[in-house]
Image (cartoon, rainbow, N blue to C red; front, side):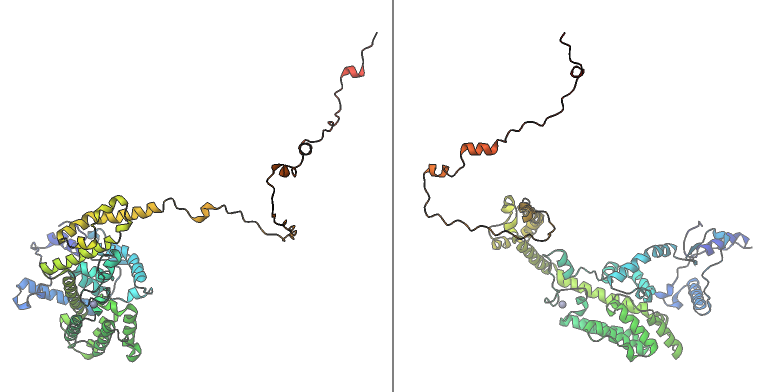
Length: 467
Ligand SMILES: [Zn+2]
């Protein structure tokens, strides 16, 4: 045995290290757990029966007589122990570490996406959610998207690609959203809803608290049929608290596995109060009910996919042909907007093109769709490349702070309009100033330069004697 960070590893390692201390060497044998889930207890081998009984006794001890010790005493043989926030981690180390690291971001994401207040996340029974989700093999891809309202419905596909049909494939009238999947008014969906509610009622009516059953029925009806939300004032204090919590979480999220922790707690109290005995499956009614709901919803999604994509090769081909024609019709709207050198990919008319068989249409789309969209985009870009905003063509004067306005001098009256103008150039020259007068205007009047003190030299003070 080699040390591993597995559940109960420290206990197993301690037992293994003590095996030499036994007078008779013990034999170790692994027995699978929960074998009574699929086979009746009487048909199991003895060693499996003993394992089942030991499991039941341990569960009973844990539920009825256990005390909470956040810090487990350290066993030196195990050599290492993991604590997070003052609590010893004794099992599921990898999951616990992953959860601890990612939970704050997940909480922030849920609060933002579903508009939840800070405390709502902590009122949800995540144990039930994770138990059922983990065991829903083959449906996790659907559930992952369904639980965060992100299924590839008609609306979502149409928002991504405009050529995708956004209509509900069943009623063909309304835009298909995540909620429309369950709220569609088509008779076939109405029948599905009726059977769905009946299956839930049949599963729960024998043992579930009648008040819980009533709240559940009203909540489901509220979401599926847009009836009023359950009113907490019509229930006692304990149940009102549950109704308030589930209303805050949202009844649409009830179908997405986000249930208040009060459901499980109130039912447990009801069983203790009435003294009714419940089977193991009835004790774990939340997980069993959520599994039923998700199985039904997954079946509904598969039916919806069949309606959208066809139930056999012929219907699938017809639906695919419609889709091809829709895409080509949309691409022909860009016929006048592509670059001139790319216009040759289009047929003379759209009608001529749509008469081609489906293989040709598919091939044309796969080859030309990217070209056409790129060409129309580049043509639009090229058409606006040298176009500037109007302000580029005008010089905007700088802003001047306005002071007190000066009074404007009135302009002289304009001269009377000339009725006759001479064509002799000499008459026009006569009004120009004379050449001499013009020169006198241009040439400045000469003035003597200002007198400067002459530089004196020694000779000035001592002139040469003539003799
Ligand atoms: Zn519909």
